[in-house]
Length: 598
Image (tube, rainbow, N blue to C red; front, side, top):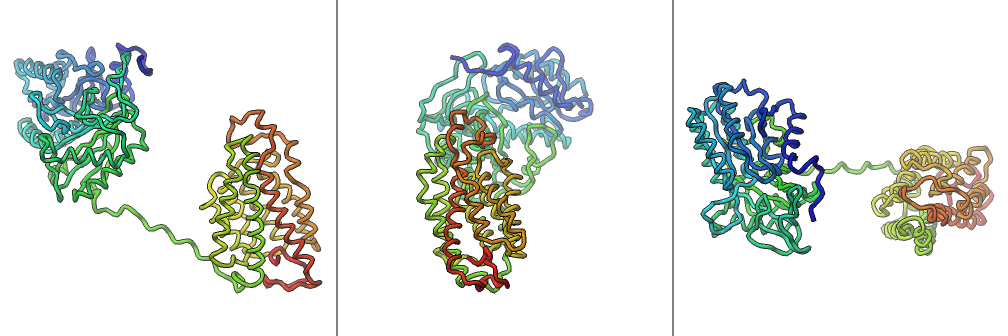
């Protein structure tokens, strides 16, 4: 069975891909009649060395993505995983020679077809009097015993593009560039690993792997690697790769040792997620630095792919300062990463997080009977929520993932643990702020965020006053924040419904002479979960919720209502013990009971 590909035709996919790159990049042009891309400023290269590379398509962004000032002059592309035609290679050589360049260097990956076709084009061009040299890059570190064909050309070839391009841009001659590039090529190695295969458009996968297998040391066309290993963690696979690449008994090893300085490339073979790529990069940095290797530069991204192969390759290049300057030299190639010229090893990677702002404590902020009573209220609310855990989960299962009770029980347990550390603040603003932070950190989910928003906003009016009008204003502020960021509205059958109904009743606290307990009792009775079943759901974090689910009662209003009911119950008991003119623990004067004095 062939895999699906977004192409117009199997036969024309390589042409279409190259045409798309050129169409979107003003710095590139196509060579008419050939699958060749060239720099659009070719005529400005008069008197300099031209650099040509290429190979089969399917390895994008290699190689056309590396055309530009400071890198390649042009690229000749073949069909997918197929060497380019000799005629097209020769046409590219002639085109750059016609522009007045003083010679051409062909940078070729070590594959039989590429060596033959580029080599034949070189000989024909030389017969025409065009100075042409060719370097064959083999950076594969997979095979411990070298075969006659030598090491395969892999992602390290891109580093050769960069080094040669910087030298050519600086005006270095053809012979010197060829000599220096050959030296650099011997100081690097690449090893790949893949979780599964890729497939050429119109064809079946190139190979098959079991679900628990990984191919180590494979080529960029799906060629077999050195062995198949069991699936492991990213850290374990990276360690295995680096062990293999640096093993001195491996004939193709990279001579890296403690104190060495390297450029590291983490290359996506095409189908790996950016999430996985970042994990691999982190593992590689830690593993190399753990070996005492200095990472001078780290290049992470997709440089040389194998179509959609879900795998990575690691490349190590030993560098000194002169070579590093060539790597850092400016380029306009679209696929080369814009990396800062700063060493990875030794730099400061973390910034100390700002300290939490310290709120000014008033004389009654902590301790005293008010603080103890608040602890009692919180304990009773927590006890109620814990007792409702399974009931709320059952209600939520009809409309969501069934974790409403679990989420609120997690919050209740977190508050209980916090209360064990000492008495809560008696200052309402500080209490709500503390609870907000606690729920954001411990509760999780959308509920934690919504409660955090509500409590954070509600705390603000209470910083100045704790009168009944201030508590009503606090409710208003909390509701406004929930609507602003949660996007729910009253009547949507969310936790907002109970809070909104209570908030409407609490508006009475803004009137002179309002009675705390009477208003609060009315607020609790005005809206319970028995009312929400008459409302039609119009908002959900899960838009796909079905009508059948909608017929079930939503758990959100009930949990909010139960919290209000528990608070009202406690205050009823406290109110019965109040004298005509209670002593205000919050320090306020006056005869009426205040919410901060419960």
